[in-house]
Length: 276
Image (cartoon, rainbow, N blue to C red):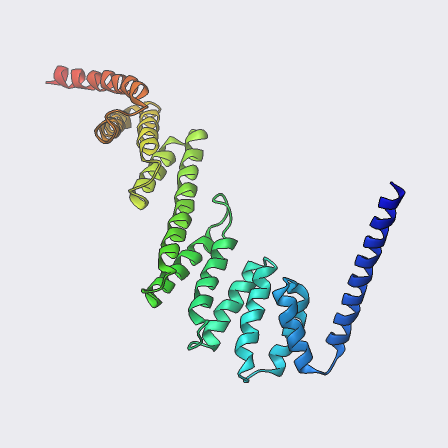
C-alpha cells in the first residue's frame, strides 16, 4: 500500500514538474524575439490541441507575417484555434475572413463551409431567437451556389433540413402556445401559417387537428352574428383533416366535434327555412 502511494506521489511530482517546465518554456517562447521559434511552437501546440496557448503565439505572428506567404497558413490555424476552443462565433468570423483574404487558397472552400458550420453550431434551441439559424441556412445555401460540385453539398443540405426543422418547430410550438392560453383565433391563424410555410411538416396531422379544434372553439365562443360563418370555417377544417388523414388518430375526437358543428349549423338552416 505504502509502495503504491510512493509511486503515485512520484508520478504526480513528475507530472507537476513537466507542467511547470512546459509553462516556463512557453513563457520564454512568448517573450522571445525568435519568430521562427514562435511559429514552430505555435504549430506544435496547435497539433497537440493546446489551442489557447497556440492562439497567443499566432495572434502575434499574424501581425509579423502580414502580407507574407506564411500569413495564409497562420490565418488558417488561427480560425481553427477558436473552433478548437468552441468559440464558434469568433471561429465563424475568422473562417469568413480567411476566405475573403485568400479567395484562391486551397483552403478557401473548406473555410467557407466551416464559416457556415460554425453558425450551425451556434444556432440556439428552437424556443430562442432564430436569427443565427436563418443566417446559417443562408450561408449553407451560398456555399452550395458557390461550390455546386463540392463533396460537402450533401452535408450542407442535411444541415439545412435540420435548421429548417428548428424553425418549423418554433412556429408549431408558438401556435400551440396560443392554443394552450385559449387564444383560439390566433392559434388557428398560426397553425394555418405552419402549413403555408412548411407544407411537408412532420406535424401536419397535428396541425390539421388543432386547426379544427381552434376554429371550433373560436366559433362557439363568438357573438351570434359571427357564429355561423365561423362554424362553417370549422367544418372546412374538419373536411381538410378527414380528407388528408382519413385514418387519423384524432378520428374519434374529430367526428365528435363535427357532430356538434353540424348540430349548430342545422339550427341556422332551420331558421332560414322559417324565414322563407
